[in-house]
Amino acid sequence: MRTVDLIQKKKEGKKHTKEEIYFLVNGYTKGEVEDYQMSAWLMAVCFCGLDKEETAWMTQAFVDSGEVLDFSHISNFVADKHSTGGVGDKVTIVLIPLLASLGVTCAKLSGRGLGYTGGTVDKLESIPNFKCEMSKDEFMKQIKDINAAISSQSPNLTPADGKIYALRDVTATVDNKSLICASVVSKKIASGANSIVLDVKYGSGAFIKTKEEASELAQLMIETGALLGRKISAIISSMEQPLGTHIGNSLEIIESIEFLKGNYQKDLYDVTLEIAAKTLIAGDFCKTKEEAKEKIDNAIKSGLALETFKKIIAYQGANPDIVNDYTLFKQAENSYKLKAQKDGYIEELDALKIARACKLLGAGRDKKSDSIDPAAGCILNKKTGDEIKSGETLLTLYYNDVKDEKLNEAIDSANQAVKISLSKPYAKELIYAL
Image 1 (cartoon, rainbow, N blue to C red):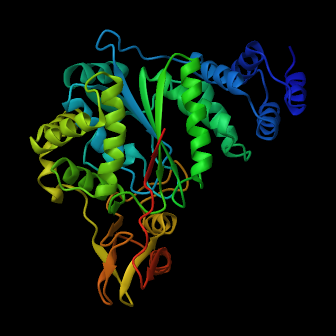
Image 2: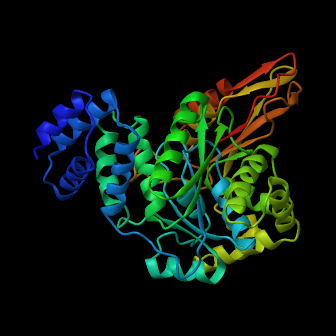
Image 3: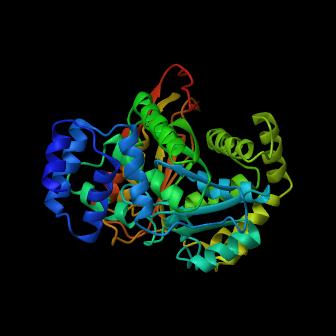
């Protein structure tokens, strides 16, 4: 079997065998297939595609390239969720303690952010001394003890995907649905979950721009999971405006804590409920969405979900008192209030432009080696559809050491993100469930 022949085969739009897919994936992981050859093959895939079987074979090849976690000695139902990423998306941080407080075993491996805002690991590490880098034994023990752990991704899981993704990132081959599917689903399978809920986002603040494209990707991931013996369900959710009101690392942790105290924005609650309900029903913890909602609301009202989050914080090396004392977070020394210039209604809050403002203030990174200011970010004082009066605060930016040029650019980006109209806009659909 020769790599050049497989490149030619895919360039002609022909279907690979399982053995050919494994030959390419394993060969590249071992250094036997050159970068330029894998680059050529990936570009051929972008032009000619992989069918459902080829996608499943590539997914399994990624899984087989590394370690697979096994929680069968702890629970026969292990839940996980994955979001394709969005602005203000802190669902993982509220969902995991909620589900764990209801008896669901949650093994969550998360990543850092690369782009406009931080990832789940960055957000959690804004809690002083919170440890996301856990050994396998530490991860397993914590899950056994308190039903939940949130750890950074282990390099021993799906190493083939890690190496191929790094190549995709610099060869303009990231946006192929089959390659995205293989990358996401392989990591979820390798992390030991047997029930996975995906939140596939679309809109200005997501890398997928339309609901139709998001639906296609979600359906492919569901079908790939089925071919590989994993139950995957999905929701499609809008990222036209940020989720919740807080954008930025420590700010999003604070909003998550407030959520678990019962003080939450409807959009964040609705997305969390949809994912939690799918998980609870899949694990036979309840039969209907209505029953799931009752359990979730009770876990919040009773304080059980918040107590579980405090346990996660304590187990992972930080001070759980932070849930009642936000001064324990690093504080922003400066703030800027963006004021409305006229009366009306918020017609648009462009998530991408708001995220860009936060990144300019230090909430995101361009390279993995870049540092993040955990205190930088933005709090929305108004959401789409809200009435606003001239002179009222639209949003507040928080920052520390930022040059005047970047600050002015951030203010300009935030200003461009807000569109005010004279009439109240129609409410847009937030969630489309599969």
